Amino acid sequence: MTASFQSALIVGAGMGLSAALARRLVHSGCSVALAARDIGKLESLCAETGAAAFPCDAQDPAEVTKLFDAVGRFAGPPDVVIYNASARVRGPFTTLAPDDVRRALMVGAFGAFLVAQRAVPAMLEKGRGAILFTGASASVKGYAESARSGRAAATTTTTPRSIRMRSRKRT
Image 1 (tube, rainbow, N blue to C red):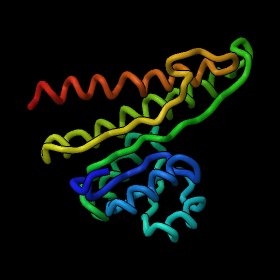
Image 2 (cartoon, rainbow, N blue to C red):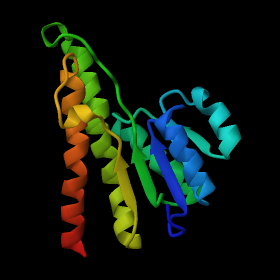
Image 3 (tube, rainbow, N blue to C red):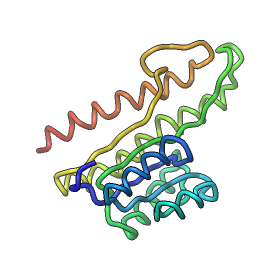
Image 4 (cartoon, rainbow, N blue to C red):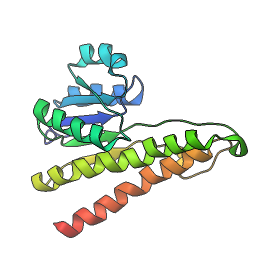
């Protein structure tokens, strides 16, 4: 990370990839905000890094709005936004529960859209910023029992391309 990034938001934070990213961002001098449905699981990471935790169900537009408002008060609009939220559903395609698949798509794809939609205007106004979407190899290659994961991950692969193209046209 470069010194030009001063604040970061990680949505869908946990103790794996997002914890490693939070540590790296803090080490590089960023103020870090972590968002998760259950912020209790982030207590040790916040104590270790000095990050702040905010509750958010990323598939809920009102909660995403509240998140960005709270993060803005904490450290200003984030320069870096990392979307790591997911709701995994695995199993044979023919036995997947439609409601489980709907939730997985809402969190993985719709939530990514909501977060990016809130992040982009401030980044355009500042003339800088980065939005990163974590994903899975299932976004580019299908795997047995990962039909749902592949669809949501593919969406988070193509969404940044669309944002980038639109942002270029505005500058």
